[in-house]
Amino acid sequence: MFNTQKAVQYDEVQFELMMQLGDYVRQGIPIFFDNVPSTPYDVVNNLAVKEDEVYMADFVRDDRGNLTQIRYDHVS
Image 1 (tube, rainbow, N blue to C red):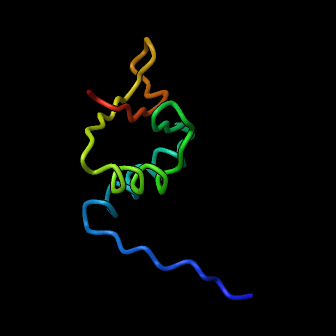
Image 2: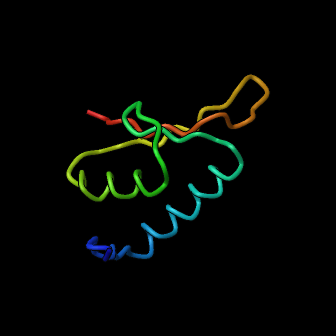
């Protein structure tokens, strides 16, 4: 069976974001996009598709200052 999906081309900024988010995931830090658990791939693709909308990355920390999750939420 052949893979019919087209290769996605990322610009430098998108690729760097995906790599940075991947580092966080490997550290066990979950990422959410609009309250949905997401992969770095999901986040970068959603930001590209919704380029006319504004999303803010929120780096959530516990009371000790440890990063516990990253959330991308729509800003209106």
